[in-house]
Image 1 (cartoon, rainbow, N blue to C red):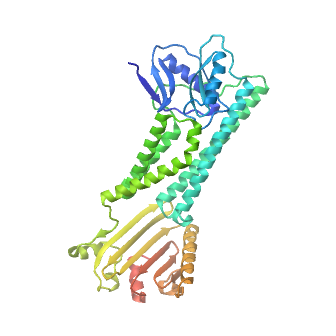
Image 2 (cartoon, rainbow, N blue to C red):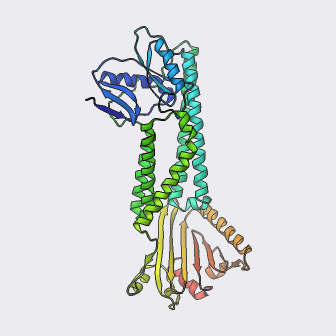
Image 3 (cartoon, rainbow, N blue to C red):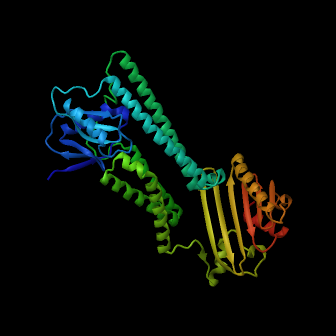
Length: 435
């Protein structure tokens, strides 16, 4: 029974010759390339010298996961020239030499032009993907304010920026390689596409940085959720990861051609993410996740002593605390915490504190928050009241329900559903929240 090895190694189109040398190295070690499936698939056999040639097929498609009709027609032409097609992935075509007097598949000039075309098409898809990521990240965060003060959304934004930087660097490197190869052709030299001095191993891990980045991203997300004890987000990340892996594995096994993938790309993309959301929703219901922490009557005094601020601290003892919700985290520029306290008789108090030593960042959040308050009071009979003096703050406003206060390094949002706060209560709040 033959033994199969899967190698997850990534090559760029400007590394065609390096890839061919790698396949020859593996054949000398007794591992012969058969096809792309889950990574590069090698079958163990007798060590022998095999000559490979890797070409960027101009009529190929980035979505091709098996030889298309055009590639099969092209392979017939190559077979007459002494080269047999082994497999296709994207625009990569791997050929094995079957005749000692085999001719070159393409001229040096044609090979360079094909590689140029392949790089341009690959870059165009990557640029579109990054643009979609950036737009989605911005819309999801509802503006810059939420990106800065939410670790998950801030991480998404930074990730998109890193991906954009990576693509830009990759495009620049590709351009430099192409320019150097152009010079070599003009000087009458035959370019070698890749690193001549690259040392290879038969490791199955390889250097497929794209897949490694995705795996590390999911692991990092799960670890972050565990540290923060955010199990709701954790099971969402896990479900998303499982859905993507299953979809990817099915695609690899079916190995559709580029045309069929393109035809169903939009439907598939929406279908995958709708399935992810549905799975997350079902799992959430199954786990019976409750955002609010219930408070037993016998533990009310203990719970209230552990909370930063309660109605009892304000001298309001006519309501009984039933449940509360808390959230807090350190982010790239400081930290934030919030509490939602729910009492009987439909009374509640909510407060959120964002602290940051970078004034320009606080200014962004503050300007957007004040704008939201002004837009809100325009639709009601309430007026936006300036309460800066009562709070001893840089700026402070009250819209009839919510207070929004700005200090040099803090922004506080506080909402009390049963009336306006007195000066003495505001003084207590300042002491309790260290304002």
